[in-house]
Length: 115
Image 1 (cartoon, rainbow, N blue to C red):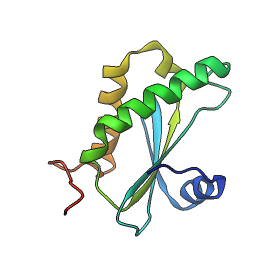
Image 2: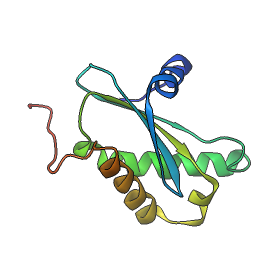
Image 3: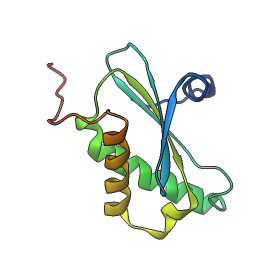
């Protein structure tokens, strides 16, 4: 699932906690829904529209690959940093995994829908 409404983003930023990495910032807030909702954003500091779209695409792909291992019940906002554009997909995925470990949102095994 994705976070889409700006009110949801503001709620995560206002009540959540953040962890920083040179490539992106992770904000997290418990949602009590039993699912993980992820939102992506890139400010104009990242670059022009093409650069911001590429940054969001890289983050979206990394989040998609790691999604089955993320602990459920959280709203997560990923904020791209300009340095994200200088690296490839494997580095973005590794950076996001580090952030999830630091935020204690990483499950040691894949979480399936039946659980």
